[in-house]
Length: 147
Image 1 (cartoon, rainbow, N blue to C red):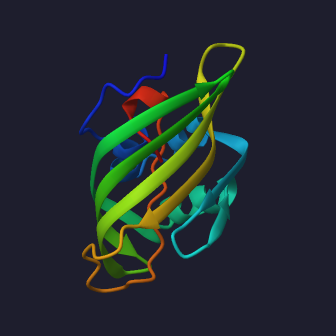
Image 2: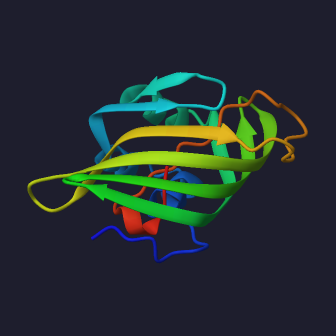
Image 3: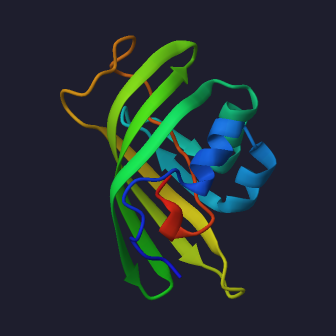
């Protein structure tokens, strides 16, 4: 059951991103998943999994906070703030981002991530690339974090 109990944690999807677990991430993302980076780059599920598989985007740190969950029927909308470190296309990325992730509850009771969007918080550190794509970490259950 989604809830906003975690004030500062890594999402299970975030742990998967940090570990590079493409197979597990494949199970968390819906087939019609769409992720939108802070630069407006749109990624489908296959594109996102390919970015993980080829290590084009690599997270080394993902600390979440200020999480809020809104339930609307079988949809959960999760927002949070994240401190991120990693690389995008080989360029260092570091900064604070706001996330919105949309989950859909399956008839089985599980959750799939259907949509993700990230926006860099103005003034946050991002020394190597101010236009780098924000991470798309995922979660198997909304209470663990956004993506």
